[in-house]
Length: 344
Length: 275
Image (cartoon, rainbow over the protein chains, first blue to last red):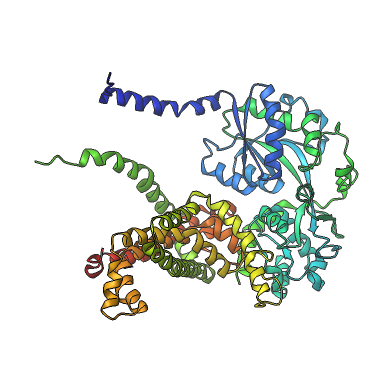
């Protein structure tokens, strides 16, 4: 028997195949959620912990890794059909999202865990899911313990072993504002920081594009020191690497991290379920364990000794919270100026 | 009468217009957008900054160095293939194609290990006493050229192999009988015959290297800035899209000019006759 495929049948098949391509989009519209998270630890942790919690509530969760700046760029590219239903970012980028009308205020009544958050973590544009505490990561096998940022420039044992990133990274920009306070007249005296780098060209040897690249280089023994969050160190330690966290003597910069509901999200119910899951005691207890090691904002969650070695709830008011309005006003100029300094 | 080919071209032309020509036109249009409407300010800002000009020069230098690298490595590999038996030829083809089947990101991160202080290059130099201590080629232009050369090598080797496969190996013997030494055979007989394939490979390598964002960012670090990183910075960090579009148009025009020059060269009557 021979089967002949007529042109009409072929066309019907082709149309059917093309229509099948739209099925996932329909499925997404029906109950799926695309949530942006930072790459690395965050991505792994949120996918592992929150996906089953959302599934129990009947929602499919797609975790999409993107740095905060990339999240903003992608949503700005198509604000009417945003690439993400929710965004994950700290106050600096959050302010940009509000200014550009990319996110919307939330209705706390739709979050069953809202009351488990301290008032400081109840943002009108979304809940704070953790506070990232920043400091200095170093390899005790390669360099002595630095007391703070100034040591990295003043002591010769760190020459050529420190890695920095550009001003696009929040971790870096917080460290630079601290350096500006130490070596300049205040957090916005960035010319003092640029001059510091010009005076110490060895500090420019290992400037890379992101903290993730620094983690790779640290793992390979290429660098011995980089500016980090406690989560970065927890991840490196979980890989068996010789890494320690230092609270700089001038204070540890900190950044609350919030989930925001994107304007134009087609999955608002799923987005609320996701936010609620992210601040639930069940999720935050799991995310507190290494390698994610995120500080829980839900006050029902008791801190583990692993978290308390970095920060306790009592420490929170004493951390250094940068002025993001000041940073956002100057960030573009600082990025361009720093690139010129680095590239010589 | 031969049937017109236009109906068969229609799907390809439609796709090209929708997904290439139209977005390209939008990109070009966007580069002229300013706060008050049409402006040349984005181009003026880019061209007025000496840093940007240096980045453009760096990008071209990287492309040219990689082209040189793949040429120096590709010609011996292709000649080895030409002189080998079927089994060795299969091995050469396999080894040439394998890198192309690996993700560019994976290959780039593998180069971090190779170029690092504890990598094979550093350890070899140390073992033979060429250096006093471990060295790192990470975040250096040399390291980046080495990585790009390996990544783009198949783009030159494959056209060269295709070209040489059509030539009888007795060609070299004939030249030898006529009194030519090995170097003379290479320079006066083989390289002119290989030139059209080399030019085709150079076009691909130059285009690939100039636009290779991931490798440039990871291996080159922040000290070696190239045009794709500049475009990414304006789009993803500074959100200045009209300026990013202007930089993209400058990159398109400048690299397009180089690629066109190579293409015209490869179509030159004397070279075309070798093909």
